Every structure is written in C-alpha cells, then in structure tokens.
Length: 492
Image (cartoon, rainbow, N blue to C red):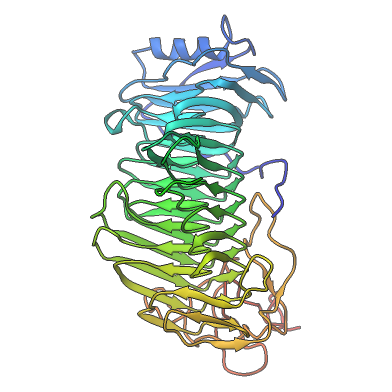
C-alpha cells in the first residue's frame, strides 16, 4: 500500500461557537517572543473575557516552528479554541522529540486543522492531548493534520490522547510510537481514546505506527494504531486505511493485541476501510477485541465493506474477538474480503473467535489464499458462526466456523491495491469474470444479516443489474460491479 506525500485538500470544517472568535496571529517561527506561537497561547489564556478563540498563522509557506520547551496548556472551561494552519501552507510544528506540543485543557471544543505536528513527546499524547483526566478533557476535532514521529510513554497515544469525544477527518498518522515499561497496559501508537464520547475516524490513513515495550519486562502493549478504551457503543472508522502498524510483545505474557486496532470496551463500526500488513505479536493482526482493564464491559464489532490483506499474528491473523470477562458480545462481518492473512499458531488465519461471543454473523464475505505468500493450507476461521450466508472461499482453503461457502478457483480481483491516503473506493475492483459477481442474495438490507448491505465500498447501491442476464443478485465482497447497462447512465 503506497503513501502519497500530501493530503487531499477539502473544504474547511465549519467552526461554531457562541460568538465571533478573537484571532491571535502567529507571525514568527521563533520559539518565544513577540508574534510566536507560545506568545499567542499566552495571550489566549490571559483573555478571560471571551470564550471563542482562533490561533492563525502568517509565517509563509513551508515553514517550521521548533518548540524548545513544552508549550503551555491551552484554554479553560467553556472556551472554544481553534488552531488553524491554513494561512501558512505546509506549516510544521516540531517538538524535536523532547517537548510537548498542543495540550487542550477543559475547553468546550478544541479544533486543530491544516498543519503538521511532528516529533512531539509526552507521557500521553505526544503531539496532541485533551486533559489530564476525564473531568478536564475537551472534545476535539482534527482535520487535515499530518502527525509524524510523535512519541508517548506509559499513558499512551503516540500522536493523540483523547479523554472525550474525538473526530478525525482527512488526516495522516505516520511513524508514531508508544513505548511501555513493565506491568503497564496501554497503547495506541497513533491514538488512545479513553473516557466518554465517541472516536470517529473518517478518510484518514495510519502507516507504520507502533506500540512496543522497552524489553525489560512484561508490559501490555495494545493497539498499534488505535487503542479504544472508552465504553461508547458508537465508535467508528470509515473510509480509512491502515498499513504496517504493529503491536509488539517481546517475551511478555500480556498485551501484543491488535496490530492496527484494539477495542477494550464499547462498540466499533469499521466501514469501507482497507487494513494491510499490520502485525500483532500475539492476537489480532489487524483488529483485536478483548478486555483487560474492564473485563465485564460489553464489546461489539461490526465490519462492513472492508478488506484485510496480509495481516499477521500468533492467532487471529486479521481479527481476534473475545469477551474474557463473561459479558456477551456481537461480531458482525458483512461484504468484506480476507486475503493472505496468517496466524503463526495456526488458529484462525483470518478470524479467531474466543470466549463469550454472544452472536457472530458472517455474510457475503470472500476468503482468498492463506499465509502471507498465499501458500499455506488451513482454515480461515476458528470458532462458530451463529448465522452465515453467501460467503465464498478459494479452493484448497476452508472458511471454518461451521459455515458453508461457494468454492471458487479465483476471487477475480482486479486493479491495483488502494493508494494511501485513502482514495475511494478503499477496496480492490472485481474483474468482469469474477465468480463473486451475482453470487449473493437477491435482496439488500441493513437489518437482515442474511442479506447483502445496501451499498458497497464505493458508495454504489446493491444489488446492481445482473451481469449475465440472470436474476439481479448482490456480489460477494466489498465491491459491487456495475454492469454494462447503465454504468454511465445509458445503455451501452
């Protein structure tokens, strides 16, 4: 999966507050003094008469502000604060791998957009943090921000630590890291989401983020890119890509779960996303769902129109799901793709169901080769599916989990691997002769687990016209091939 060097420009998010914002303009790239970012933060904090504030930049294009000591915490209770880099395209704020960057404290809303945050360092949230605990956390909105080389310690969140609602759109997280010490369970190489409120990630890219222990003992690293500890049932990842993220556990007996994403509690919906080449030393090469801090919490995972390619772990090469504390959870996988994932322990090369999965639905999903090189014989799924319908498996492999499947000699994938940052659709195309075409149900429904979804990874409706003149049926997998009739609005 390739990483493009720039973010896709999109319209600015609207900023809503109770009154017109007071603007503090940064005119100097110096660490301190008149016109500096530090001075702007100090002026904002001193203005107790107003609640709406914007820090803007007028330092020219391609400039870097090097932060020589921790920047002050920003804001106060009830304040609306925006950090807006759009006036200086290519702006970077650099913590030199030793200093904290942006720290939001008690604000009603904290927004960051159109800049790069790099090499920030803190105990939690190396480049951006909301509050010291849930009572002092600010809801945050992040748009068109590149986070690179951000570093965090035992509190987690290599790039971002969020203790309240967090919405991330059109952003890139590259090469961020959390390093843990013995007996500490934490993680989120890119983002740690704790506390109340949802984590919403849309059209964003996570590449080469990682959570590692320092090697001196039994730490509990979790979630190479995302560690979700908040109990909301409405966390969501949409139209996003995860590649090369890793959670390590050298010699330890805890952690090492969720190469890209670890869900500790609550519910997560993964839609129209591509997860490739992520690695977990123990469980869930791409996604792990399991409890450590709160064993009795309910956990639900929904995967729709998404692709898992060449992920690896000890078990659950792509997805590991377990409710160890005894609470019953729901796993729902529909119209997705599993290709060349690997479990070194042999248990669930694509999927592994652990304890207390109250309901597991598997529908309209395609399973290709097993093993990173595609040459491993074995079974994709370990566990038992409660309901299953219209799935397909490559000959020489078995889905498992008590399912039946259409056996195919090829999946008939076409085109190049999706490019990151994630262009649409975040999925392989189907060749016109793919056996997955018209191999599903005749009806589409979000509520009926036996039906296909009502739209695909490209946003096209399901089902499309029957390609071969037969009944109109859904395709298996993330993409619905648009037939020759009405592809461009006219009969060909």
